[in-house]
Image (cartoon, rainbow, N blue to C red):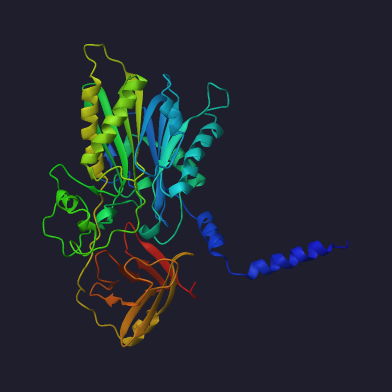
Length: 468
């Protein structure tokens, strides 16, 4: 059969495309498609929150190659919900509908996700999964309703732009279980940070707390990705990478009082952070039956109270959202009913507990070079080369005058290794290599041509070009 000219051109173009290198966009798409989900990580850790409340289940999903993730809360029947949206950059799905305040329960699930705007796919994915599994249908009185919000966890937090997608969201929904919530760098909080306003750039995560007062149950969940710093009840900063010029024993009030100088060269010697895309997304759940207006006021009360635990809070660079849910399982007589003011006060304290529990252990940074390990020139030369972390980030290592030097050559810097000039990568007695500075930059090589930067919960893996 005779082939048309168009067909021939199509074959030729397809052959050409097959041998061309992937563009950054196509390369990132290929990375996304090859990801393997990790479900319910951290559920068996000592720090996980455990509580008795079968009215809802919680599932988390993570892509460790990010790392990034999401958290799904699924209620076992439709519940009444309200929302309070603050800050200058919220990213949400279906919050305007909750804001209307209809007096009947409609909400099925809440989703928190990383991945910035791209993570909103996870919210709609959970809702379609409710229909696909037959739990919800299409009749007007049986349509599923899922709401959700995202945090920004790109940029300097990691060296790629992997995001929580539909596949991960639906897997987390299926994996959801009652009564357990992992705290720290899990789920949607996998690559969260806090304190960027002062250059703290501390690792953060998701936190949760539970309290029972008589038959009243209260749970609070939050993902702290705030511009402000997490602050404990004694006024101490819970997590921060301070500049070496900062005074010993500083408190949150000290750096707040020093604004704007505390974020500029002079007072601290540190320029304001360039990455001001931050969000704290939260959920409170109570079992007492409440009216829509009560639930709305509860959301406002608790959301406002969070400014004690995150300072400053709800800035123009934060996209803070708080959802409030009543499962209506507990409907006490008037003489036993706990009033809205008391519930709001108790829940505010529970939320502060949740905020503090979001802070994971921080990797150590070294301002000064640690003791140097002697490495012969041949071993150093074997490490030299270009390492690829993603379509956006590569690291060039070379040997000069017996020293190993590193320089970022992709679109972004590689943590403490800049693009503008090469810096020394120092071999240490532990076998790792470090770049001294305010923030951790640790390099660990393996025998197969791999390089891991900052081994641990926030590690990034690269491969030397030319190796398989």
